Amino acid sequence: MGSATTQALAASAQALAAASGVSLDTARELFAAARAVGESSQLSGALADPSATLAARQNVVGAVFGGFSQNTQDIVRTAVAERWSSADDLVDGIEELAIRAAAIAEPDADVEGELFGFSRVIAANSELELALGSRLGGEDAKAALVERLLAGGVSAATALIVSSLVRQPRERRVRQLLTRAIRIVSSQRDRLVATVHTATALSDAQRTRLSDALSRRYGGTVTLNVVIDPAVVGGLRVQIADDVIDGSISARLADLRQKLAG
Image (cartoon, helix red, strand yellow):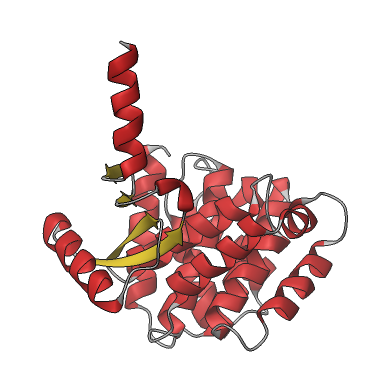
């Protein structure tokens, strides 16, 4: 990600957070905008062209997305007013704003946990992953499949995020899409997410102690996504962003074998 895109994302996210009346309809329209821009090289080029005047770029927004709510149009206009490193980065940026809008719209929903839960379902079902990731079949059909799978089991925000992302994978794997969405939602809510691999389920007390310890270490609220992994044998393997804390017995055994072999 280039420095221009980093700055553009930060400014656009701040504008979204300051907007009033952000709803799931706002998120739905932003996903539609990202899809429209991503599917048209002419449109993405016109909106991301740094040589075009701001007025020209914003006129394009009005012409193409005039049927959207004023709130959504204003958010997209804010995004195209920024300088992006590439047209693809602009598409990613609008998609990120859509995910953030969904998180804002349902602040009490456990969106990160629900996204993680669905990612584990995908990981355990190769046929489902293939069906959602295949280039064969229409994107609307994939979204309808996701909506049937999630019906009644997750929040409306999570269902919207997942169904929208499978409509516009842009050469990305489904689990990659979900992992990115989890990171974005956590960022919007000023939280960090730790993925914990353990051989056996953690009790509520253990989860609380671990979350509190990680929150103190990283200076912010840390939520846990727990993966039951028999290969761990004992102990825990914890990953937060690029940091890995491996206190598992399997890691110690691997280290011992390496030392003996050396």
